[in-house]
Length: 237
Ligand code: CA
Picture (cartoon, rainbow, N blue to C red):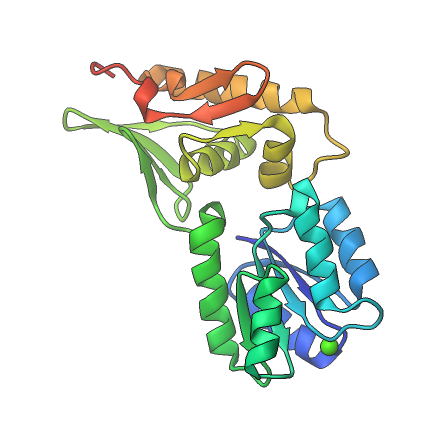
């Protein structure tokens, strides 16, 4: 399940896109202009944005440029929609910082396929693919976490927040994530939840992984945040 923001003032198109995304299991918010879009992003950071080029007030490209300049939204995955299919617009859209570009009228199937592709590249924690780090395996579809070693499978019990946190860390291994980044990507909120909340859930996650000897997969990087690293495991596990 991905949090997707659709920024489009033509409500028929916005609704069509939203219905298809919801049908695919995603959580969709619609914004009719740049101001609404900014408010939505300030409240909850989406996993992906579908951004229309032509909007009332400042258009899509101006909005996108603004997002690319802010640290929090710099790497937000964005697909831009436009009524015009000519080459110069395509180049301008990509120049403004769009990850992908689709001209209207577009096929809904193609938009869905491109959204899936972009999520796979940039927000794999929003998809249902099984992930594995070391001997640890997480299946989002069945909500199961197991450790498989020496022919023995051991199931681990995790709370819902610990599960989401582990899923995010496993899909972005070896990178250090600050507490505010984790709040944005796992909780969807960086303002109304305290940084300390992250520490509490990391501790719970380590406690849940400890029976399988996997607690050390989650490293504390002092003064920065947390990292999941398979390298932290000793050869004996
Ligand atoms: Ca429009």
